[in-house]
Amino acid sequence: MKVTIGNKELEGTQENAMDHFSDNHSTNHYCPVTDVIDRISDKWSVHAIILLGKNEKLRFGELKKGIHGISQRMLTVTLKHLEQDGLLTRTVFPQIPPKVEYQLTELGRSLLGQLIKLSEWASENMVHILRAREEHILKND
Amino acid sequence: MKVTIGNKELEGTQENAMDHFSDNHSTNHYCPVTDVIDRISDKWSVHAIILLGKNEKLRFGELKKGIHGISQRMLTVTLKHLEQDGLLTRTVFPQIPPKVEYQLTELGRSLLGQLIKLSEWASENMVHILRAREEHILKND
DNA sequence: CTGGATCCGCGATGATACTG
DNA sequence: CAGTATCATCGCGGATCCAG
Image (tube, rainbow over all chains, first blue to last red; front, top):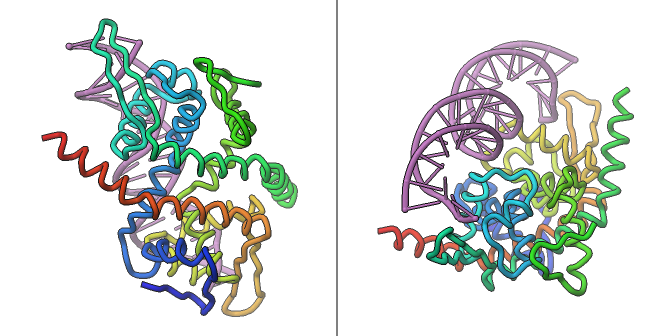
């Protein structure tokens, strides 16, 4: 289970998280954590979760308007995935015209916290990354 | 700059992060934060960063062995992106056979912290997600 | 209004061969 | 060993039409 490349290991709280990731490296194939990470790091999923973090309940059309560039199909697919993963609930109001409300579950809200921290990191360090990219372009002259 | 769908806003530290994301919703198109998020949430990038978090320096071949399933091409592309973003350094040793070492920068290490927290969330809540998926499958009978 | 179903283009990715 | 270059492919995701 433990994987060492080279011969260095991590100490403290990092060790547990690393070990989970280790499943994916070396010779093993399927890793649930990687599976979950792949899903929640999905481009549209992140936007949907963040948007639902700003608004307790949202209808399909509101989400569509709120996530710029997303197609109807991808919104449907994304919301279906998030619902399957238990990150949000889908409530159908049997009326004409139909009305469907989406809302984060408690699980979804806990994930929201993580995504916000990640987005905070991104906004704080964005300038460094953008500058690094520019310098890299200049270097190729 | 501020976007409200419905009429709810967030309080506290979440507000800033949300506002950055807001650029991507509504009518605007390009958002640097989204750009950065898309890049750092890339499947292979996460693996490479995590692996380089476990080992201060790694050669190309070691990374290839450590990230199961990645092709040579994608490893090259991924490392190039991470280098362009200033998240890792690439050191070439001019010798035969060639030797190249990759190492996280300080920026990369700070991101590593965030990714580890995300992976910790994933490993802690993985069971709920997997159970939710199973229940959803059972529901479709 | 909220999707489901279908078609399809294209970019991302893998496989392979080659090189300093 | 550490890539580069090229070709083939495959699935994401957009566009469109249809339905309840």
